[in-house]
Length: 332
Image 1 (spheres, one colour):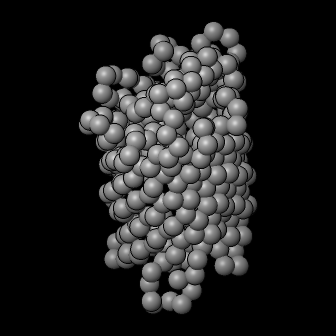
Image 2 (tube, rainbow, N blue to C red; image 1 turned 180 degrees about the vertical axis):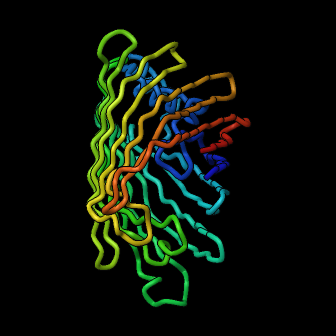
């Protein structure tokens, strides 16, 4: 599925950088914003010295206690469309808190359903090398056809990310409980997912880095239960500061391949080679993450299938349109 996401940011009172956790917000957009955004970006890169200088500059020239930003987004694709809006403000010197509302319509051939969500997102940096993110809320389906469709569906996510000195170790742990509602049927009766994801990115000398990820989840739908586990291993090399090549292997296992409403193969494997590209200009940032390779999967009580080609593309263009507004276009 191809998806185009266009997001605009309008800050009132004072310029507001994105936290990267809001609706349709991605990290490159912060590079076009305020000194605070640039300081946070330096932390993401592991450049602690530049980050500390940036925070000091912000506190010196912009001591106002309140900053408010309004975020709006729209999304169109082969099966979903929606709008979202939110308001964010600082929570201390290195934190942000926001309230967001989202409305989505999911459609397939001859069927459609709507879902709404209201919740909060917060982020903080208790230390220069640690970032914390917390979000929570509840979704519901505004449909009078079924009484259970209007029940609240709570979700919550907590993430810890540690990045060392320049080009050092990166460790990320995320715990999440959320509904899977990517089809009209799942919107009306979603799969409840509880998962933990741990990712690590380790330098091994020169431009080379090792990557790994472990995933564990429990998926529930009515009286149906499925345990999903997975792992990723790979190696990356920086060809230039803006270009990185990577080779990765992914595997996912499902304990209940007969689960209804979503794809749950007993085993799925992917091997791929990827390209990561990022360019920064005066008013724009361009990012690309593309990969291609082979995939195979095994259905319940069947032999492993044959290898077949697979392709993925994710791209983003962030364009500063003046003042405190930034336009984003994302394709995947």
